[in-house]
Image (cartoon, rainbow, N blue to C red):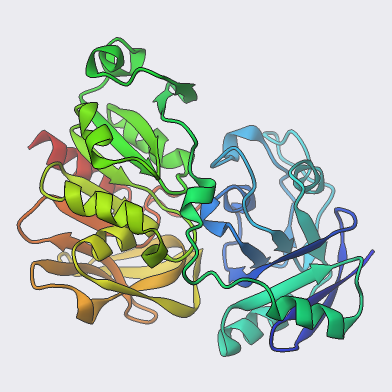
Length: 377
């Protein structure tokens, strides 16, 4: 069935829905990954956004529970050039269209995604509405103009867990008692060397998997957690997760991070990187169209090594705002934006990209080893 995509600047694109009728709104962005669409769909960092895939054929290997990075789809809509219903993969348990319908997400294909991507690159990411029920372009443009901006919105609190839990052998185990004695009796602690307290701002499961693989017991807290609650479980380190929206709007997490600096080793990814930078005195700003995809080149300034990274963010850290106690460790080679920082004297570091490689390359997995080394020091 016919669908229209209306942008706030008046641009209209046509397509068709492969998931049924609907009307959705959000910030229209693009992702350059060739594979990993299910991990992208379940990445909480896409809350409030409509994602256009630049790769022209999506859906050909189906979906399966093992590739989920959270318990839900968080983006508002999925825009494709061509949807492939006849999937072929021995791991697949269903098709993409059925998966989107199950989660109530609108899927649109037969869209000129090259034109969409070019427009966003030139004009910037912008608010949009997609509809199969209202096909009046003028009406849809007015609706797009009324869509709330992502700036100053605390979306992390909307995707964070509601209660603390333990990542116990690949499953979520909610606990009312998070005392050190109770945590020490869990199977994960018997096999662990370190305990990591995690602030969930939009956490991806593979971050937990990689920490657990390095003998870490993962205790996950909602974004609203206070520093005292984190420290009460006697962690060896603190992890600040990725997440959606404007980092400057997550003021409570920034304050929590600020109070934790120097008390325990800190490691932040994506939104967690921005939160740590803000906690240390820096500033953030909105990028024109953001970095989203599995092929972003990043330079490690210490080693000179070039990493190919997976990324998903629309905001960046302003290098000129960082205090003298903080140094930039990584830069993006496409636009020279900040991709990593560390405190010169205290055990705190972060990266803007996604080293957990789900989806994406494995180049940057060493950062989890670095975090473990800080906890062992």
